[in-house]
Image (cartoon, rainbow, N blue to C red):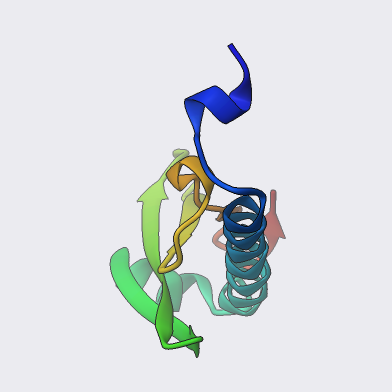
Amino acid sequence: MKLIELCPVTKLQRQKLQKNYQILKQEVEKFGKDYQKKSYEKISEFPDQDVIIKSVNNSLISCSIEVYHLQKDGTIAVSIDAYGLPTMFGIKPSYHFYKRLDGSVHY
């Protein structure tokens, strides 16, 4: 079975969906890099939240932020998932990082 049989969209529609994914990916990476600069305390203060990043072509690009404790040493894991534009198969990009108590970040 070919991909076109599984997802019957035109070439133009497919290109639009791929472009949407790229837009979401760029925005969530930009937001994630800024967000990881926040202090450990600020990040852990609001563990789960939804944030509007920006508006593109009358659509709001948003992200959901999930923070959870991962290790006994206090390291927290942060997952930022983008949404707001349709993409191929509904797959949305994410940005992940780990924040240590001393404020350092690792991936």
